[in-house]
Image 1 (cartoon, rainbow, N blue to C red):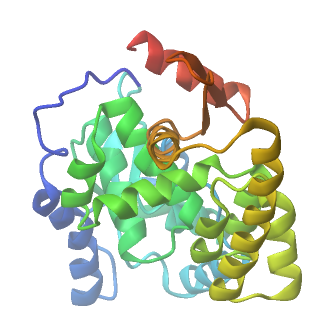
Image 2 (image 1 turned 180 degrees about the vertical axis):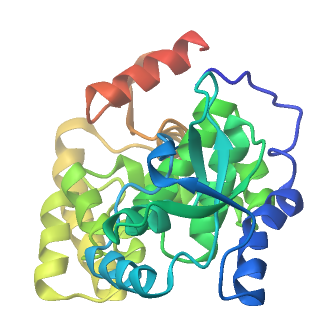
Length: 296
């Protein structure tokens, strides 16, 4: 998507306007046991490629499929017309219902058609999922990162629009700097966001995550473990390279949150020059960085 950035404009049309669209289908579902208004064939509806949700719980999907097979889709999907594709629609909210309807072999589903911009589509998807508390921490963080990188939104803007603190947004995005194995544990629900936050910036995060899961440690116990191992690692590191001051560490953390990747700053001892090292996890993340640096 090549939506131009509009830094001086609030998020989308504003939270209240977006939420009225998200909640409208809830109201309709309460008022009637049968969907009303528009219906569309399921094969004319397509998922949003920028949907923040990347994983769907198999058990929850099976329950939803069984419910839809028995009662139909009570709550309409929110969709918009696909640009340049006559007769095709893109899901704004309700991808789980659309997937479950296909599994239940339904041919049509009820929809609410809205004229949303690209940024509003992403905002609604994030709002809907966060409201229902069924978006895992990594998918939530990826959604925030998309709003920042693709649409030029700041952490403060997103915090106000989504009723989240700026620190919550920053801490969420920092989770994307964790190794892929740790992110997978978080997505699968084997590791909580609280556990994962204790591992951010730790050089041995992957092994510690496995130990936390295997031992069933609480978040507090995980904090003690990571602090103890980090202190041991720092002693070894200081003997080789010298310790970093608190300002440097803070800058590393802030850059990591903004870029969504691990950042390391190394000053030349006794001089003002140094090195900034960026660690990307795959080529897609490298492409995102190159686009960001080029201003596109």
